[in-house]
Amino acid sequence: MKLKRITPRAGQIYLNHNGETYRCLRVNWRESTAIFRRRQDGWTLTAHNVWEYEDGTIEWDYSTDGHWNRS
Image (cartoon, rainbow, N blue to C red; front, side, top):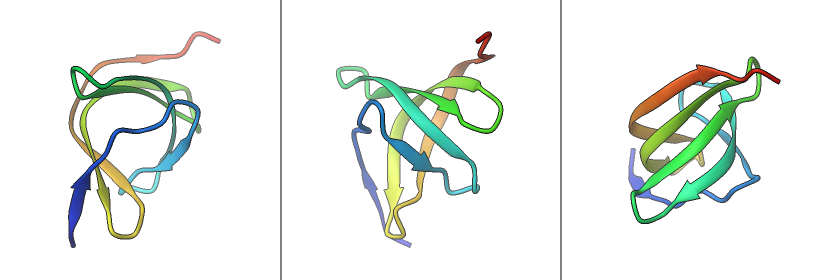
């Protein structure tokens, strides 16, 4: 399956290739990172180098700063 590198858009909801949905909160295009919050439980992370599959699902190379959202 073909992948292309993307810059996510803040406010948009994405379906991860693993079936979980995430809202993009912020993007730092200089560092190729995006802050995502998993909609099901509030897990928030910094995704590095986001990729999109042909079916529209996304993945990233790795994540850092994972934490539970307090609100």
